[in-house]
Structures are given as C-alpha cells and as structure tokens.
Length: 209
Image (cartoon, rainbow, N blue to C red; front, side):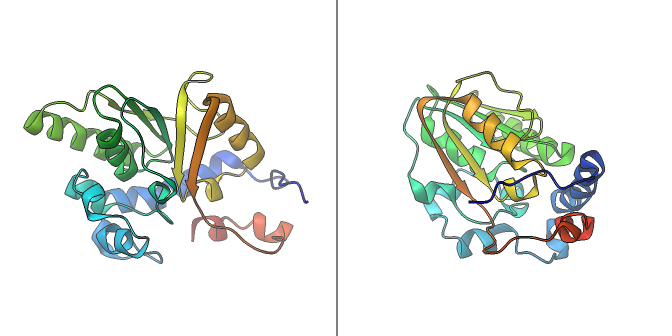
C-alpha cells in the first residue's frame, strides 16, 4: 500500500487561498454555474432524503458543493457530539443539528470565511424564527489543525473536502485525535484508482478545478 505524502515544494498557504477563491463564489453566487453540480440538484443526485433537507435553510442548500451524503452511512442519534469538517455553508451541520437535537452538539469547521458567514447568518435567522439551534456552532480552521479538543467528537462527518487537503496523513491524524474512543467517521469524497504524478500534484489548477 502506498503512503500518501505532502506534494513536494507545494505552497500549502497559496493552495488554500486559491481553493478559497472558488468557494467564495459558491457562497456568494451559487447560481452562476460551475464545473461541478451544486445546490438542491446535487443533493438529489447524491440521494439526500427530503426529510433531512427540511432542516436546511434555502440559502445554505443553494451553496451545497459536496460529493456525496455522509448520512447514508447512518443517521445520528439524539445527544451525540458531531464535528462536520469542511462544512461549507453548513448543509450537513444543519442536518446533524436536527438529528442530535438540543442535548447534542455540532461544530462545523471550514477555512472559507464567506461560507462560515453564510452558515452563521442562516443559523441566527433560523434560531430567531423557530428558537433553538444552540447546539450548532461554526468555527474557522483547516483539517491539518482542527480547532476542536482531543476526544471530543462521537462522530466526525466530512463531505468532499479531504481531497483538497495537501497533507492527508496530518488531516487523518487530526480526525482521529478529536474522535473519542469508539467514535466513528462518516465521509463522502473523491477517490482515484491510480497514482497521481508529482507534476500533477504541483498544478494548482488541478486542485481547484
């Protein structure tokens, strides 16, 4: 089995900023069209259930840009503590918050400020209209240095984000650091079936597009 290593000489800070540029647009103008599906159409393609989507504000759903549905691996239980990594505007965070209920806790983590702001604005609006949602919180951070304490999460979910991490071994190390003993990890992401060349790993356009 090959070991996934950090691409040689890749400027990780520059890469993150280029990725952020793409997702700032998805946050602000999700209807403009991209090289990937977004929004409710995508949610249907990857088989989100309508009762799950009923917990998601319309603006958050519009900016959905994942690759699958982590809840197809199992729904969450009331009272569980959940970390949603690479949460974007928060489609999975809102679903998770609905499933764990007021006795649970969900922390959504993303590196793109505009996505987090959209999720937080939707959370505040939903809380004002319906009350509750104190169990949902958004934090800025990256996979390789998660702003969550050791062993906090009973469940970690992630949707289409680990493929964007240059240091995947560090990312998985952080995931297992924040998981409590016996916790579980439910992810949806992109996989390739053959090695990626070093030259391709250095091509920022391939990471972002």
